[in-house]
Image 1 (cartoon, rainbow, N blue to C red):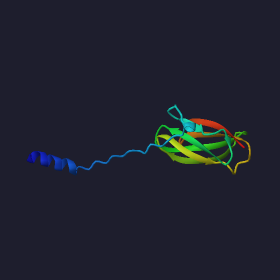
Image 2: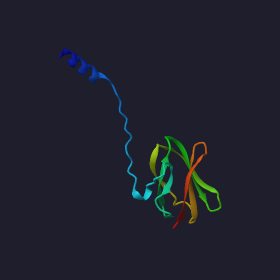
Image 3: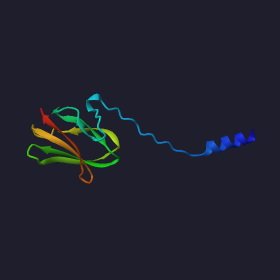
Image 4: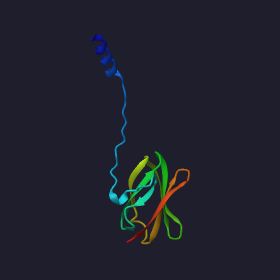
Length: 119
């Protein structure tokens, strides 16, 4: 009995840290079956568009918005987590036109792209 009590005391004193990433709910409109990529919630946009950037690993990624003349009109570095990352892109300052959103790794490796039109 003493040995069991000592064993329980020893086990209860160990420090183990359990890290569990919160599961991010992905709406059906942003669900992707691919392992990595980019998906827009809607192709017709007014003020903002929600996107899902499904990433291969934690790290920094570049999002570019390109107009129909192939000119980069906006870009941003994001720090993403492995898996689904739901983000908002605010486009109300852009002129009414068609655009492409492209996703790259920090080293400029292409991941995915989607197009949208301003309404």
